[in-house]
Image (cartoon, rainbow, N blue to C red):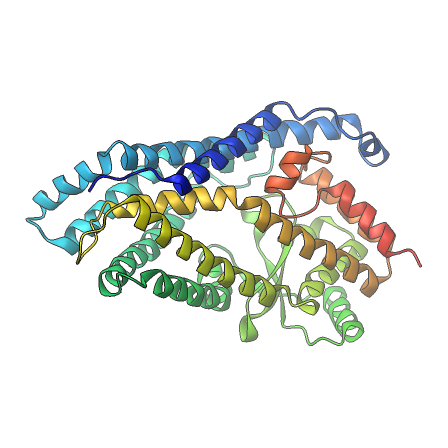
Length: 409
């Protein structure tokens, strides 16, 4: 099977290449910080945030480029087809055995390619700045848990996909999108209660000050709040954060124990109000709906792309078609980051405004943003392209301005 480049492939690759170069340029040369940053942060804080994030951005773009280059080499140089033929001979022509071994070879290769970036970015660089509290053995244990879970889910996914492609050669993309959409819902529902506890311990918030805050905010919002849980984040990091997760009976607000330990009550209240605001505005359901829409769009585009780029024989699709699927979703996810992050930033802005309405405490919300940025070493004045391309939350100066606007009569 000879894979052919068509106009859609060229467009996706070119867009990802241009974005990669722009991202790399602005990671290395971010320009001058905005003058208004000096109102809240010292020059040392600005510089430290930029130094920390510059390397993290280089790790990110290096990881993406390495994986994309490897998959493109397999696909367009014919190495994937050669590997597939060799594995088929090894297994004596067993299709499903060949497919699994081919998937495993590519999966292991990508893991090995990405391992140096992951190890440096999430362990060594975090220790360099005093964020990580993990030992090397603890880090490896987490890594092996995550890779094991990824291997199981990915293997099941690829076997299901190729079965669907052989069963419905003209409409496999519809079934693929439907299964993926269903997985999005299931994942949102069960992840907080099945997967997250594999990595962290979650206990109900017991501090009377916190539980009282939740009751008062809940009354103001006229919203029944599910569980408020405290996560033992301090076993891995000194960074503070909080998030909302789950669906229906698994809906919950999760607070890092570092946030409770290191931040005053009025700032904890600002965090709780922000997370509650996501529920008030239905952001989980909106995110799921947009994810399902994006799923059908992506799978439909993949179908058109493969149909025009490769002549698929009748019956079982060749195993090395998996490389094309992987490369497509890697490039599409990267090139589509601005759209996804634009939607995410809009939701975060809305949550910030609603949170101020709930607490009525603008100074505390502003202090929270300043403290989070300082302690987490945020880039307080990132380049405009970096913001547009990769920021799921507005940068701190934007958030402060929006919070202050929301507090004005």
